Length: 182
Ligand SMILES: Nc1ncnc2c1ncn2[C@@H]1O[C@H](COP(=O)(O)OP(=O)(O)O)[C@@H](O)[C@H]1O
Ligand SMILES: O=C(O)C1=C[C@@H](OP(=O)(O)O)[C@@H](O)[C@H](O)C1
Ligand SMILES: [Mg+2]
Image (tube, rainbow, N blue to C red; front, side):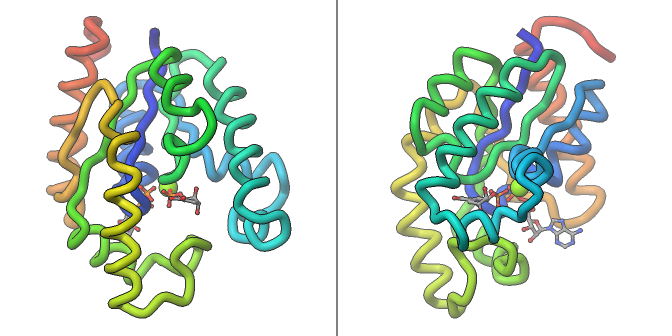
């Protein structure tokens, strides 16, 4: 079953780490948000604004089921993906799920500078952002924790840290896949 799903909160590093990890494992990289944006010719932000979150979650569910049919792919999901519809169960049936786990403090530091293109965070003050992350992460964690693998993704800030994390995670996944792709 050569299909990997990265899950975790916004800012956990699914997109950043995912790209490098896919290269390392020789898997095709798919970012679910980008896949949706290409298909709908709209940004995630404008889908939220024009159709609302409920409609976005239906689109996300449909597109997940589409990419979940592909082989040899590493899919970076959106932070909310595991928390709606049958998505988490579906991913666990279709491949290896990996939870990129991060503390609220690290997420806050990253998202402070990257909240603009995330509709759920837009316009929040620093304090509001911290409160939202803590509350929302607590609610979502039980879904993330259903992943097959859990990986600490707090250290992705420098190139060295990122490379180290990619190496560690690649080892973990290769072990799980039971096949040597190196
Ligand atoms: N090149 C970069 N320069 C500065 N910060 C970055 C860079 N790449 C990622 N980050 C930070 O790390 C966070 C994690 O990025 P991302 O991979 O987009 O997370 P996710 O896909 O899980 O939401 C970003 O929101 C940003 O704060
Ligand atoms: O957590 C969420 O509900 C969302 C996370 C985003 O993806 P990232 O986790 O890549 O930021 C994107 O799918 C959308 O803005 C909603
Ligand atoms: Mg992302």
